[in-house]
Image (cartoon, rainbow, N blue to C red):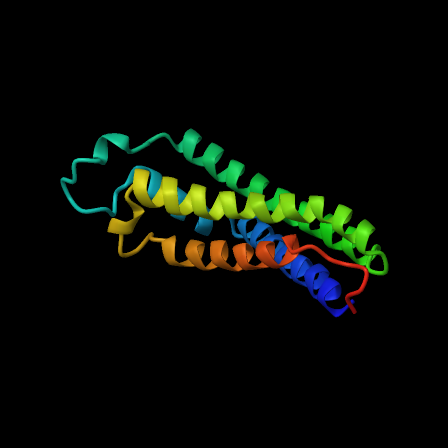
Length: 164
């Protein structure tokens, strides 16, 4: 039962984090929009680098990318809140608990896709965010992808009726 409770609470910890990220992105829109805008414009990467043809200078596209990021973060939060709720309400039955994991798994996977694929892969490599000393979110994104990955690995471990 302790392991199941830990899985539910860790899922909710991710939900809380994602909720606060969404809250900050909405209530301090301009600060975080600037991050997205600079990454897409590639204006703080190495001068004259050969990848600058990838830069996106359209503010409308910057807002669209940022809105997509916020929507995905909200999806992570919602799925993890709902997943944690389903897990907590099936703690006493291992079979039900295993079945209840689906929503939490979806939320954690979506978070890994956002922070690994969106920030590390697309932002970091396609838009060469790694070249920027000012607007480089790879380290934070890596931390998040690892944390979510660890929670996901714990969650997907099968639960058995004999466990306490």
